[in-house]
Image (cartoon, rainbow, N blue to C red; front, side):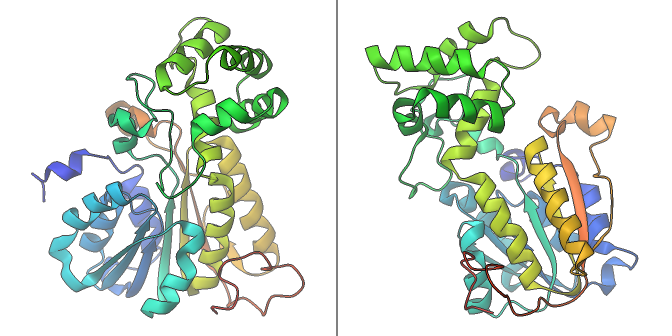
Length: 322
């Protein structure tokens, strides 16, 4: 659908690399089964997968109902080849079992934020337009960014900004936030962004509050936990020879994916298809600046998981669904 307005909502990153990773050494016509898109967003990667692999069906999930509505419209012309549901990645495995999704030959996680989040100020993600300090992708989550900013203590805020946002001025920013909220709680995005900009000083290539807003978004949506569960779900759901493709936008995320895949590869569960991650080429970086930090890793499932022992899957929501 080249004239589909939904296609402009979010430009899928590393699209050619995703298709190549799923294709492996075979042809597009040879791949048959289900590909699970655990972060289907507005359906950009999903559409390309369905067009490129004619014998594939796609199960897509997203925690954000507003974004998922775009995917439903965008992918409606594929009919029964597509099944979509609203779910967090950590809730995904029971849905796959319930729908009888097998064999799973591919599993995609695109951990980037959808452009819709930034372009709609009322969602609370944007630094450029004022909106409520929310940042929830799943609106049923209880905790908002305002809750964190107004109630976490100074040390915890500083750690959050430093470890989840790579913010070097995290201590000064946290101190300023705590002092300011004592006068009036933060409820909107721009007052917080302006305060952080004052502490960070200057404006370079990116807005000085970008890193702190990233950290808040990750905490609100528990992105680290969701990724951890996502890798477990991929390992459990994929058939032998199935491929997991993970796109990250943050060094912390990429480091975690590398560590988990390497550890499980040594145990025989994965074969690493690329030891070093793939990034966007110069043309894609120029055409889509939001792709500049994207990294793709791919791993091939080597065997079905053994029955979990001890605490291997003790806190996995998929436990009991195998």
